[in-house]
Length: 272
Image 1 (cartoon, rainbow, N blue to C red):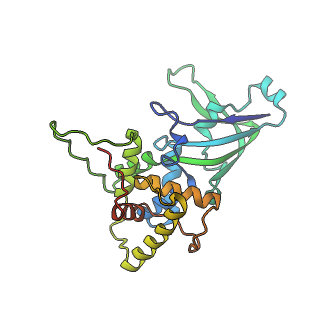
Image 2: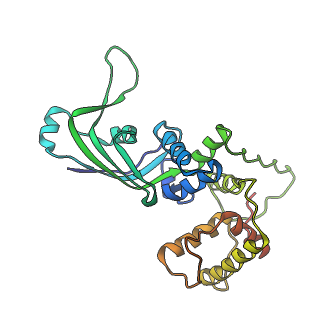
Image 3: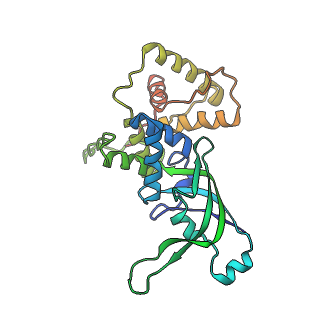
């Protein structure tokens, strides 16, 4: 028996995982957290504990494999979507492949139950009378939740609040952008470790690479862009392997480099 879990999120934004700038795959989000925790092990624990504790939203395409589903149905031992959403990340049964952004749960059935003597919400429990195998593919974490949790625990400075515009100022024309997109853009731009200076030589090399890549993607018609939009366009081109620009091994576009590039070429889209 196979069931597909499509969502693990909370209102008011139930479709956040469809935005790749907000719902980031586990691997790049781990790299982001490592900038602030300086080691892979605590960064993994930070994401794991936040997701398991409900402070960081996650989403995955989940496949539930049940053996002998007829017996389990009669015995009330089937593992359902709602139970998976709340009980998948058990440290004893769930193993995560961070490089592939994929995890596997192998263990007892995950069930929901309510104590008849206590009017509390349903709780998760694991029933050893049946076993289940669950594969979580393309696991993503909500980047805004990650940034907020880092700030809450004092591991990252809080992004400054932009001052309100004067009442008499005419709004400048701009391309519509969602509030959450702007929040993620500002949070990510402020998320630069203070002790990680970039040399002039490295900046120059990055800008030459971005110049060549921008020419491939946009030709001579490069529009005004947010830094995150430019970064995402490059990531998509890398994913589809359509770039011919020679790149260093394991090279990834840095948000700050994309922003510097856009500013120097007057292509940075400003939204007020």
